[in-house]
Image (spheres, rainbow, N blue to C red):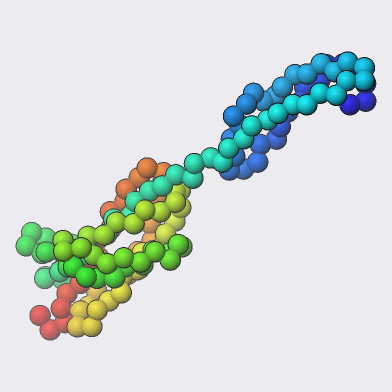
Length: 143
């Protein structure tokens, strides 16, 4: 510093980081003295959310899962960005954990002999701690 005296030192915190020590800090500097200050930081938790998919056999083709329309196992879904891939369980369900907040595109890999009854892909925006449920319906061709 140019001269002895009392100074207020402030850290400009970068995006994605948070302080773990007081900010600003006040320091008094005497002639010929060297003073060190420490500012602690840690990365903010990015947060997570879940995108859960239900894959169902849309028997009547109305785009909604009605009573008696069961889940379809072994269907492949991808989530972008992140290049996440998964396969539905015996109930036709799968969940993906994603960084949040964020906007994601969920895409079903359509199987031969089936046609879509709901939009594909579907875009969803998630917030930290949120679970968003999506439904994907398909109907067998010729049934």
